[in-house]
Length: 165
Ligand SMILES: Cc1cc2nc3c(=O)[nH]c(=O)nc-3n(C[C@H](O)[C@H](O)[C@H](O)COP(=O)(O)O)c2cc1C
Image 1: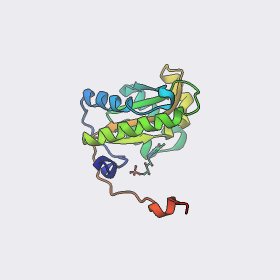
Image 2: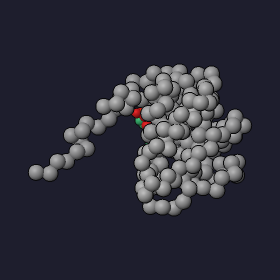
Image 3: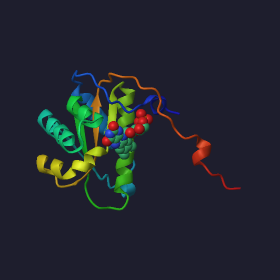
């Protein structure tokens, strides 16, 4: 198994230090190497600025109360919005592959990430804020880890696998 698959964790505590923008571009470049149905590459990205990050975080807190995801969005140096360009059947699967590529590339650079699906809950607000007409799928927080979580539990392979006779 790739060592990054084994060592990766969702990181919800970041140092405030900025990270090199080139690292973020490398991570996005890993994302766009992902397979996609019919090679239609449905992913589109926006790197948001601090003002937008703060507004998104504040809106989450306003609607859902203080929470870890909102805290990450506020403190992490980079927040990438990930959009789906059109309504093709397999786009969300392709974008999932893109997300995983980015997360593993970040891990190989020693950087932490958090996949933020929760942002979907404020999609309309984000649409007002960021002038992009595509469907918002998720966000990805990228920064320097300030925690080292133990592996979160997984079902055993036997619990999820059936082998037909
Ligand atoms: C599609 C998706 C959406 C997620 N959304 C959030 C989120 O909004 N906030 C959050 O804190 N974690 C989010 N996560 C992270 C999961 O909670 C995490 O992957 C899971 O608990 C397992 O922990 P691990 O990633 O450290 O192995 C999301 C993960 C995925 C795959």
